[in-house]
Amino acid sequence: MITAQGLAAESLEPLEIADKLLASRELIGTKSWAMALLYYRAGLSQEEIGEIFGLTRQAVSSHLTRAVRVVERAGKETTDAHSGAKKRS
Image (cartoon, rainbow, N blue to C red):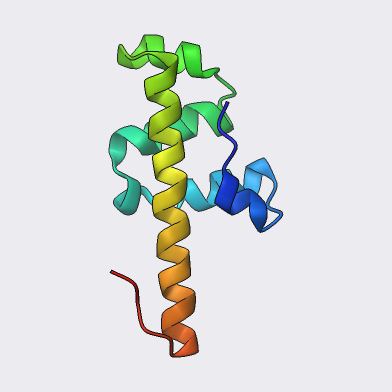
């Protein structure tokens, strides 16, 4: 099960995490976006999503975890840019 470590640290609820992921289709890619939609909105398990995409549960978990990290990083860069801090590469 995805823990959304970084986003969870901001005390976001699963639906808030889903909203951030689903609003970031261009950042996370269509496949990861579709997996997030199925997992967070449709309520499918990672095993069920894996069957749809022909992947293992672990691969689905990796896609979701990576998507959360990408969105988290993009949010941090945006926050840094607004505060005048240098962006990380």
